[in-house]
Image 1 (cartoon, rainbow, N blue to C red):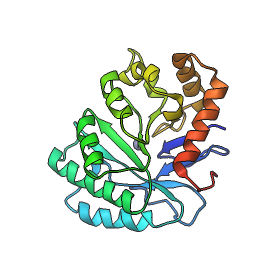
Image 2: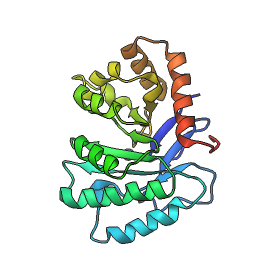
Image 3: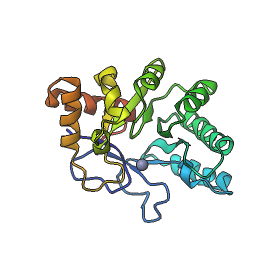
Image 4: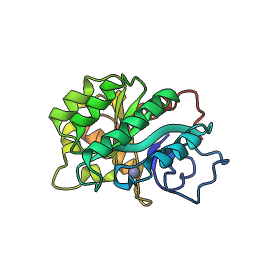
Length: 222
Ligand SMILES: [Zn+2]
């Protein structure tokens, strides 16, 4: 079974998905959809503490399976010190709710690693749209419970840092996602990862599904 560990669109039929509902006023919390909620570093406002209260309320819902996407972005408007404060608050929130984190990170991986360590975060951490270089990947692999999620954009040309890192990443740490792309074909993404890893696409697909189930824990995939 194909999974989509991070999407801003509604789930596709038969594809277990984690829908990021942050900022989606149309989302109905009562429906049987697994979701994540968080404050994206590009959308930090002056009232981020108010936004954090809303995130905490949504996180209490039984279908909330992760906090995020949250993280650090070199190109976001908010100063890094504020981005760090907002991320650290969400790391604490995820820890308190015993939920995984879905991390958005652009060129600030060492800062994210520092905050995760500072707060001794032990739950799964998914680096979505992963595009770290092999050195960064080696650093991240030293941490427990880190996962790397790839999308169609991983395989853009010229070769991305994320694609270059794939040979280093164990199959047990790989996930797939569509993010904002409502037309992305996840089976093509799986095929391309499999080629890079020189393994069978069908066994990779099964491993990715198992990784996904491990992350969401006792939640039923639907
Ligand atoms: Zn996203």
